[in-house]
Amino acid sequence: MAFNEFLGCEQPAYTRPIAGGLGQVEEVYPASQGGGELRLWGEVEVRQGDEVLFTARNKIVSQGLLHAIIGITRNHATLGGASTYNPTARVFNINDLTRSWIYVGTGTGATTEGMTDLVTPVTTKPDATSTDQDSPVAGTYRLKFIATWNSGSLGAVAVEEIGVYGHLFTTIDSTASTNGRLFARLSTTDSEFTGFTVNTAAPLTIEYRVVATFA
Image (cartoon, rainbow, N blue to C red):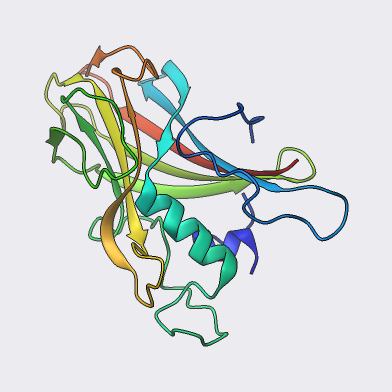
């Protein structure tokens, strides 16, 4: 199955991997020729208005890793062993906030592999979400899930954590996926970004990128 199919986007999805770290899949799918392997990780860019606050690596939790390996090894659909791809079973969706979204949060603490939610989520969903994808160099693919809150939609939240939620398989033997499951998290506790306060006079945009590369 193509990488774009298991993530549920229309085209394939950069950034060189940093060795080690929770949530980076190493040697998930060894190449039969050439000695390569698939590497998968996540990164986040946060913008307030036109200002880029930061770009950071994050941690994909077990629910996200399970979905990734299931998507690589068999059909991403509610059809069990069937070979037909189900285009409605998208991990990240465009303006379908019942299935996938991003939350900011005020909680602290390190991300653990078994986390299923932010520590203290601010449960105001984005005003809009969208997806995009690119392949900046041969053998590297990046899917983007972009969430935007309009000016004033969020209060002056002191952000200490960010969570990405998707439509996921959540057990290794799943045959059906579930809405709104935590895929990845980043936190100030893990020194992945410096906490910031939402500027209520400007829109807040969080762009999450799932990146895969042949290495």
